[in-house]
Image (cartoon, rainbow, N blue to C red; front, side, top):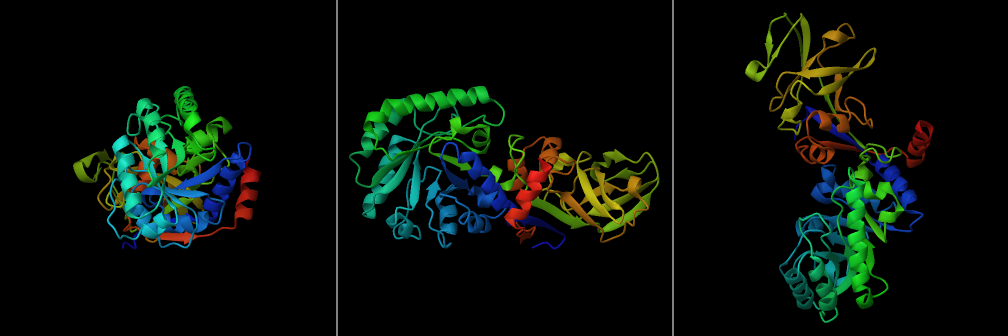
Length: 392
């Protein structure tokens, strides 16, 4: 594990964001499923579940069985939704207890998958809660409209499953509300088609974080939120607080004359006498190569926070900063920097750096290497809500 940089995560802000989402759900009365796949989007699923299980979360969602196993030993009572088409499980296995308790829910993607999950339940003398995934335009996985109706009917004669939910997934909620509405209409149409075959307690769900922030018409009975709990909202909910910042220190500071080239490939030439600083992070840590000569870093100087540019090519484990414009601010080896800060849309925010690197916040979060240690803090939720109120 590296000691050159560290990622600070404020679990108090996670709790505050959960509170914001719950307030948004109040008009619709929808429940909240917290998506913690990919190890909590790189933040850490285990600590996220620890705080969110106490914040009104009704369900957790992960991708595959391996992620569910990693959480199965946590002391929480909420069910876990498997979002991938898990088709087989060894028997016995660590998830058997969750299955016996009907706390492991499966997302069904095709008719064969439904039959396979039914067999998993039969093998364990259990009725596994299943959610039928309707493909309304994502074209990635899920049942067609014809398969959707057939699947609902099949569940009535399958002793190893119990129809618990009907769901779809929004493809463009953050950017194209017109297509989001098209998907919603298709979902509503399909639900009406199968309504005579449904029990009253079947849960309908569609909304991801962006759709949840857009309004109650997308909430149905439950929403599935992940990114918004970490404070990133595609500009749709200004009350959310980014929970993460990436910190490091200057490991080398030195002056160079005009005309010198910087870094691999000599992609940057100094146009003036310059003071350069080296920070020990790079693409091996998850800092994108695409931020070469485009990234910004916040330097914590004696005279306050200063933003400086990354120059030259991002290395495997180093970046070079141009400190010339803040020379005289007490710069030295060991000066603290923030490679990513916890602002909503500042120059060193995750959002702005993702834009500069031609990627998005999901990838930036998930690519952060686990050899960069995570440090968890907890700011009281009440204090954070007061800050949010003052900001608005």
